[in-house]
Image (tube, rainbow, N blue to C red; front, side, top):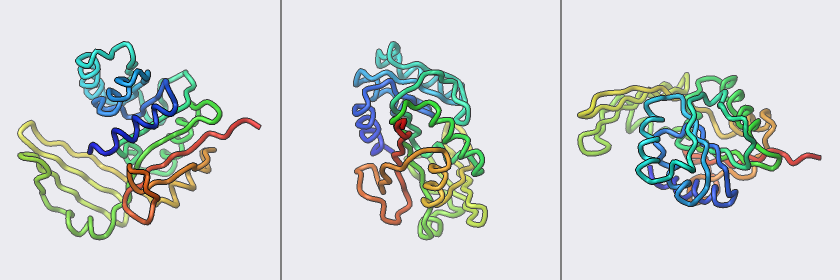
Length: 219
């Protein structure tokens, strides 16, 4: 995935920072944002991911602009209020229930200044994608194989990846775009845009959705 990077960098430019990135991972998006001179507060629940991210930040000479913190999507260790919170690369799909999704969205909203925005991307698979990938090991990159096991009843995806460095498995859970819209409303956020891809094309019943939601201005 590379198409999302310029999208999130552009969103950060609009705001000017500091930006909170939930699920900062290896810094794939945080580093390009910081390279624009925009401060980033990066949160991740994985110490290993944060260590890799710290190395990337230092290699780029951006340590002064990236503040990395160990924490959870549902309870981010951020006391600051910012104009932009991002949660890229479908990180909210790691939350298996509506209660946890709602908790996470409310937590993100609590970090926003009035009028601030939450931007994130998720997906809901199509029947063709499930049929073409279910239960099959596919070589996504040379020497790196991926297997998707879909449970359409529970709406979960067990994703396994293996390569020369080893094997890992994660479970993701999806919901429909109308359900995301409802959760955002319940979290006190107003949907400003729902795109079908990172080129800002309107959502038209595809698998991917990119959401821009705003914290209401005070009355």
